[in-house]
Image (tube, rainbow, N blue to C red; front, side):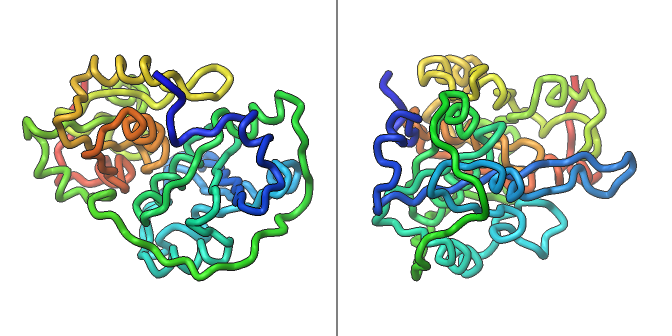
Length: 289
């Protein structure tokens, strides 16, 4: 299988760096630990400091929790309304006529989260394979300081239906033979073998496990499409089914969604609140072992 259409390599990005049609964004956020017993599973910290310490030349910075999430929600990173997204992306110069490239530090999941959000708004972006880590490891140019940004645009979304669902929809799909529910957390959390920072240990009943971590190589690039397809097929994830993906907070599972989309799956959706909601709600069933 060829390179996924939604990916761009470091070589390819280097070839267009400085092109006026490029819109390049660092999407990094950090989930920092919180004291035991805290009401939240982690503290969301924007990657603006690591951006200032070093970024790909010309990049702008996107603050997921601060600008592109629903501040009224008790859960981090929840998809906000279209008006908020149009205003935020417009401020940062997002333009569908440009080449939009997303990257992050440490893990590609922050970039793939923005990729999924933009896709839901009708915009197709590219994700940098290996992110800033691979770029820096290869000795490519690095810029320091605050983002200079791009000229603002009047961003107008063309929302695509069905990209995000809530717990009621997930509950209704449990046991549906036309649906497969995919958990992107690690196997120890999927099986409920370790305490969960989200609440009750375990998984959505009937869900299968394709950990996002198993879809990424040691150098932080994504695995091949052939390997990804084999991993999904082994769990019964097939193109004829509606695929619901979830994780802890709707972030790491976008790695699964990204690869599924590149494989040609077209009935994909994200349970946005994920285990951050499900595990804390005693009215919702949970499964272990």
